[in-house]
Image (cartoon, rainbow, N blue to C red; front, side, top):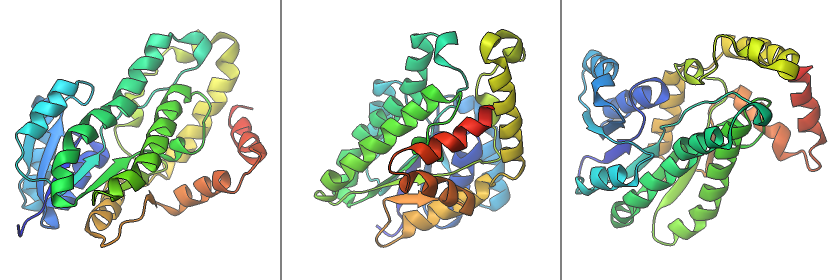
Length: 273
C-alpha cells in the first residue's frame, strides 16, 4: 500500500491534535480518535488550514469495547500513537483510592486497551506503536503521585513488551515530553480553592505550583513535539525512547544516572520547600 495508516488517540487538542495534522501533512492517512467527536472542531479547523484531511472516529480508551469496535472497523494499520491521557494533581492523604484508580484507567489501562486491540493489525503490517508517556514516567514528582504512577507503569509495560513485540515484527517506542504548552495543564482537575483545602500540605502545594508555573512559561509547543513524533513514525529503525526536548533530556538524565536515588530526591524536594 502506498499510503500508510496511523491511528492516533486523544486528538481533540494538544499533542494529539498537532500530531494528527503533522502526520497528515507528511502523507499518512490519519485516523484521529477522541472520546467525544463533538469536540473535533479545533482539529478539523487545523486540518483544513493545513490543507489536509483526517478521519475522525470515536474512541473512549477507558472502555475495552470501544477500542475493539474502533479497531474492528480498520482493514489495515501501520502505526498506533497512544496519546490520550489526563493530568492529575493531588496527594494520597487528601484523595480517595478511587481518584487514583481513575487516573490509572485513563493513563495506563487506556493504553493497554487500544494497544491490545491494534496488535493483530500491526503484526500483519510489521508496524509500530508510539506511546506518549512523560518525563514523569521516569521521575516521580510532588503532587503527581497518581499521574507518575500511571506513567511509570506505562514505561515498564512498554519496555517489557518491546522485545516480545519485536519478534513479531512490531516496534515499540515511548515518547517523553517535558513541559508542553497545551490544554493538558488546565485539565489536571485542581480546584480553585485547592490551597485552602490543602491543610498541612498548603505550603508545599503553593511552592510546587509556583515552580510549575515557571516551568511551563518556557514550555515546548505541541507542534514541536508532533514534528519529532512524525520523524519517529518514519524512522527506519525507531529508538525505544524519544525525549522531545533538551530540557526533557537533561531532566531524564538526572534519573538515568542516579543509582541510589539521592539526586532525584534532592531535586524534587526543592520544589516543595
